[in-house]
Length: 323
View: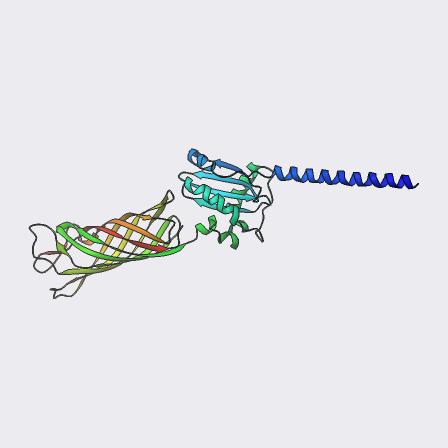
């Protein structure tokens, strides 16, 4: 009887050891099966994005990455990062050079707790379709505070206020030119801007060789501008649009008080670097006085003192949260 119990005890130990080995082997198999972070690039003309995607490490043993999908649209793209437990974050990318750094940042910065989860689709194709539905229907996970804090697509579409100042010139017909000082307060809506512009026109002067007596005139204007903001690559933002302003005109020798004129204009420019809180901005514009088309404002002696058509050039800084 005693020998029988000894043999039974040995067999029990052997069986337990076998089960332990099987469990360890199964765990290792599961770990190796999820150790790859799938990276997919979809869209037309996406060759540059596919080249950039090759720089993203596929090994995911030390992260929870399950899949990275890059949806290319023109020069821009949207990155969707999905974890193994189906948490998701999205980022807008301005160029292929932003892909690898953004994916690497998400590997370590994606919140791990309290982030709403969507039901896990069965296939990668279904996950991509589900992401589109989530964006279209405004699923809570797209606006969760922890995602917004990391700069999700929803956050990047939120309005951002900015301001700036420029030094420049305004010059036009009748050989008139003046230095200018400008200030701008505006809101960046992601794809376009809307703001209030103020300008001080220091003093007009004639710059031609056969100039008439110099006018002692200056002006102060205030107006609104609206236009597009289009990122170009990872560094530059192109801007352009229209403006409407009212200018108060002053001449030292005038005896009939001040004057005013309405101005309509267009502008184009560039802002860089677009990812900085302090950016350089350069604007080139064209303005006209519609109610005095073809005829500049003149003083009592008949000397032109304010051009009815003028170019503007400004160079300065723009301050605000980057996109």
